[in-house]
Length: 330
Image (tube, rainbow, N blue to C red; front, side, top):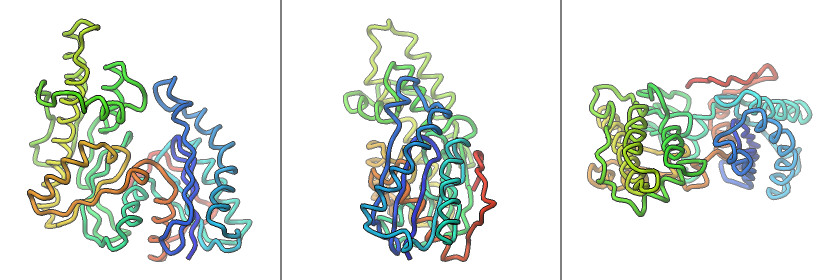
């Protein structure tokens, strides 16, 4: 089965083509440089760039895969969560293609796409498994019982982890996106210099809170003269606090659910410190941890195509009434 995937939920325009789960092409056009000067993604600008980029990215993906349009068996597209204008561009394109080619259409939850990105690298992965889903907009612990049965065990009650990284980066005067900037700066810092709070780390549930941690960083920065802020130490200490919280809750969820496999997903899964500490805990607690390559942590259409492929095999599909759902839940 040849599946074409389309991803336009935020600021990456991406089209991918998979053949029986193997990548033939995965083209991503990022808008990061465009939104950098605003310190975050501007929805209207993102939608307009998707509109101009998508036909070009689509043609590139087809050319790289070296297939004809008639060979496509399924069209898979992100329909939420995300920016409504951005989502509408991808969905409208997918619907038009489905109608033109007479091929089935399936809408994919963006979060499920991130989860299923792991099947690209780990094709033998089988449920049940725990997912630590961490990105700029989402921080959740999921229990995948079956490919089409995913349970949310815990989620953030305020800021997502990636959002906290962005806000702390802004406090420290770093660039956007904040996650990679803090990751890079932390390598030269002392992670034990500041003992930042770890909100809800020891709570009985699997929920998260990062707002208080972000505020603690702000108050710490305000104690220093602006020319003498120990940015490396603050970044490293903040990063350690976030990772401590994420991993303690995730490994607890795996143990309590009697599941022996944890997978990471989402943009924050690209964080080098999180990846390192997850592997260390994996060896200590004898729980397998699977981490996708960096290219499959950030938004891409290969994960959407993979999710569509897996879910279509479960006899799931959509039709031309498919709509964008910006606040879509699992």
